[in-house]
Each structure stands twice: as structure tokens, then as C-alpha cells.
Image 1 (cartoon, rainbow over the protein chains, first blue to last red):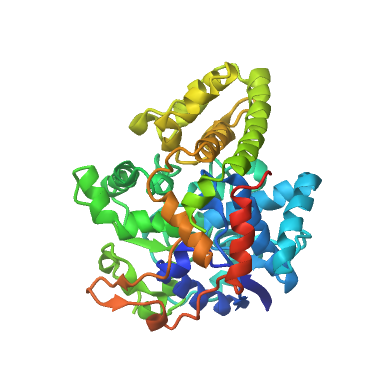
Image 2: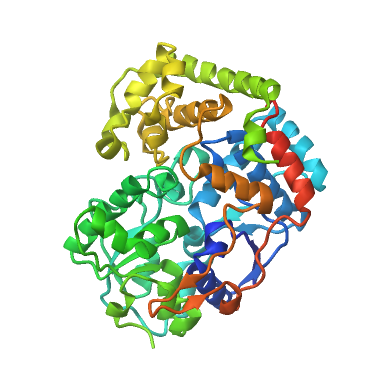
Length: 289
Length: 176
């Protein structure tokens, strides 16, 4: 059994409870032990437009908390995953900056050494656990379910920092979904942004981005839209009705987290996966108990 | 310490501005050496069609040193940080998204109004370490749930809030 500290970030543990519930329910079935640590804070990525040093400091702080307990971090949010990856990249390549940040970390009795690894939902499933292991747990295959995937911009770019999936043709979610019996299909808008990063200052435009992508997904007849990012999911699921209004379209696209579908395929009960918290019409799916 | 205090510390803000200026100068040297205005960044830009952001023009303006004009423009706040421009630059050296981050940092350090909900998020990070408090959510059949109702463990946040705040407040104004 491999152990990871679950680094929750902000959006998942304060409102996207379905992601956290389904993560805590499914990964232990795959021999992954999730440990909760005290003291984590925001990764800093949402503050990058305001003050980039703050982003770097906050990321280093969270990595140092993992290092103190000598445990790798499971980072389900792509935005956090990018912030922590970029922090590692900077700290490895810029000694002066590392010394400076470490000087600030002292007050909380922390230090960054660069000894912990970080994984996201997608590479943990695909690269570390592997599809052979996942296949052994499938009890209720998702036969023929036509799926549109959405990785989230921060999970796939910039590749120079080191991202868990390919920047132009990500396929790891597809590989996992095929093992579950589903039928993921590529579509032209697959790499389009959800709009969430400008929700803070330009909410109408942000929702228009969401609406435009979902509208195309709906037109192409997908059964379900699958994501792994709490920011994206908030746009596509929680705000789907509003997003539809911005493109004058009645959107009825079931949107679920990859970990929720994984749980359903493993035969986990719907309520344990937080499926009643999805606000998009997931009842249309007719899968699960 | 509130955001108003943070942004009105004249002396320290001057140092912060100097640091961001250095960062912009380095970016300016880079784009001058490498950008040949192919506009591939703009062709893939997520904010281009909807909000008329043209990353290659931002790069061109930076090349000419028109930093004040950029800092004072609302268009820098339309970037969705999708990183496609950085990923797809044929020179692999020009990253409009990073130029835009530096310009926005400069706008904030210069005491310009921080748009939208950024101020609220920053205040929340300063006080509890997270961009927001735990929210009540509703189910599809309109039942209200709190985090603890769902059997989730207590949320992880800074243990010693005072120490956390001290470093972070200093950091917002300190010379980098």
C-alpha cells in the first residue's frame, strides 16, 4: 500500500465536496492510503496575477509541510498541481530564490529541500496504479458510455514545467475510461478553456467560455462530460444553467468527476460518491445502483 | 492588516515595483531577441475572440518599452492563463502569459484598483489561509449540506494563524 498526503487546496475542500468524497472513497480500494495533514494553505496560484512571489512562497510552504512528514503529496486540483510543480522548478533552478524563500519559511519552522513528489488524479491512476490494477476492481462496466473528457488547462500546460499529460493530445483519462468499459471520444473543443480564471473579474465572459464549450459537447451527442478540476467542474456543473443563458442555449449535459465514474464502475453506492451534489442532470446517466 | 494597508505602504511598494520592473526588463530583453511577431500566440488565445486580447501585440508593446500603457490597460486582466501562448511559441522563448502576470503584478504594486474578487480572495488567504471559508452547498433536490454533514474531516489550514499572517503580510510588500 502506497501512502500519500492528500493536499486539498481551497476549492475542493470548501465547496467541491463531491470530488473529495469520491477521491476518499475510490483510492483506498486501489491500495492507496490517504493521510490528512494539518497546516496546509492555498497553493497561491489564484494570487499569481496579484503577486507572484506570494504564489511561490505559498507553494513552497505546502511542499515543506509534506517534507516535514516525509510523505509525497496527492494534489487533485490541476491549478494547485501547476503551482507546486512550478515552485519545484523554480527552487531547483534558482538557488538565490530558494535561499530567500527558505529564509521566510523559518518563522513557521519549515524548510524546502525538494524531497517530495507530487501526483495528480490522472497520473496517479494511469502511471502509478495502472490500468491493469484498475481493471481488477471493475464490477459495473460503463458499457458504451460516450464520454467527452476535459483535463483543465493547468494540468496539460506548460509542458516545460513538467505536466502529467501531453500538452496537445492528452489521452490518459481516455485510457482509464476505456478500461472501465466506456467509450471516450475526441472532439474539436477538447482543449478549450472553461473560463474559470477570469470568473473573479469578468464573470459574464467566463460563463460564456463555459457555455460555448458545453454547447458543442451537447450538439455532438455525448452522454457525459468528465473532468478532474474543481475550478472547471464549478463552471461546467455548478454553473451550467447560467452558462447556458450566456449562449442562449438550454444545456442539459451530465457532468461528473472522473473519480465519481470510477467509483460507479467499482460498484460504490452513488451517495458515497457525492452524486447528489452534482447540479447537472446526472440522473440521465442511468448507471450505478 | 488589511489590503488597504498593504497597498499603501509607499516605501516598500517602491521596492516591490523596482523588482517587478527588473522582471519586466528581463522579459523585454527576451522578447526583443526572440519574438518575430508570427502571432501564433494570438491565433490560439482563449481570450482573443471573446475579449480581444492579442498577446503578440502585448509583446510588441513591451518590445517598444510601453510598459506604463500596458499596466494601465484593462486588457491585461482578460488573460485566462491557459498557457497556450507559452506552449505554442515556435521560438519556445516567448511567454505572453508570463509577461501579463508581471504586468498585472505591476498594476497592483502601483496601487491601481485590483479588479473583481481578487481583493476578497487575498483578504481570505491572509485571514484563514484559503481563498474562501467552507461553503454550504445544495443537492439536486434542494437539501443544504455543510462540509461536516458529509462526513468529511476537519479542513486543513495554517495552525498558527498569527505567524502565517505575519510572513504573508510582509511578503506582499517586501523587496523580492
